Every structure is written in C-alpha cells, then in structure tokens.
Length: 241
Image (cartoon, rainbow, N blue to C red):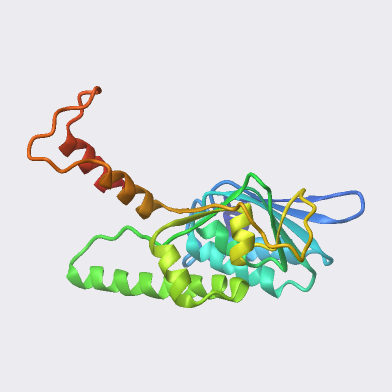
C-alpha cells in the first residue's frame, strides 16, 4: 500500500505518446526531475517500467533547461540499454543535464532554431571544511562521468570537452552537428559530402570577459545615462561571470 501511494505522488517530467501504428514517442518538456533521483528507488523504476512496457523503435523529443544530473545519468543508461533504435530530436533546448540525455540517441537531430548547452555540474553545500572538500571531489567525479557521455558521441578529446564545459558553451544546431554532438539538422536537406557551415558557438565566460574589456579602467568613471557607475557595472558583470 505504501509503495502504491508513493508511486501516485511521483512528479512525472516525462510523457509517452503512442500513435495508431503503435510507434512510441517520449517527451521531455521542462525541468528534469524536480526531486533528485539520488537515493530514489521509486521514480527510476517507474520510468524504466514505462520504457520497457513495449518494444520497437522510439523517438525522444527534448526541450529542457536541464535538472538533476543523477536522473539524467540513469535515463541515459536506460536509453542506451534499450533494444530498439532511439532517435533523439531537440526542438527547443537541450541544456545541462538534458544534453546528457540527448547523447543517448542512436541518431540525434536538432531543429534549426534549437540550442544545445554544456557546462560544469554544480551543487549547494553547507558545513565545515571537510564537507566542502567532499563536495568538490564529488563534482570532479560527476564531471568526468558527464564527459564520458559527450566523448562517446562526439569523439572529441576529453581536454576539449572539459574546457567547453568550463566556459559554459552554447551551440546552434549546425555547430552541434559540426562538433559531433548531433547528427543532422531537422527539416534541412543537405548533401552529406558538403561541410556543415554557418553554425555558431559562444561561451558565457568569454562573452562576459569581452564585455568587461570594453569598459575603460579609470580612477574616476562618470555614471552612465542610467545612473550606474563603472564600479557597479563591473560588479554586476563579475556576478554573471
């Protein structure tokens, strides 16, 4: 009875749709797991049960800013172990943990207006010095596990992927294809022999640094038209950075 009640309380962040031909489509639309899957025995089993209740190829649509890395890791493994073909389609955003799930696709397609973002894992922690050290060690290991997923798909070096994560890297659909994070851009007919071009990529840290460099360093800087001083602007940019 307790298990039944717990299952009923699950906050599902995924949705399955089956068409008349029996083809199944899985949708991730929004935050990946409001409640962490760490030490959660119910939600992962529920997701896996729904995944395995039928066979055949599946499509996975993703539009998510990310979420719980433990949920993303387990979902990635479940999709990789699934016997049928897994086709991932990013229609809006696959960021952070959602980008890890995307890497589970046998084929990954992105809408021409979609974005993919990768960055370092983060956490909230409180306690004494030993707790901080443990948290840092944990984040290092989590990052290594995430790099594994990106490396398997892209064949890029771990060093390059690590740097991209450090800089919080955003990629357009074409740039994601160029770097190996995706296989093709949706709705576009392209010659496979022609190189992918016109994609763009930007790094959050680099953008902020570039903006900060545009402000002259003076002992006394007059306020701008909005009444914000140079010092205040630099403080805000450092917070963003």
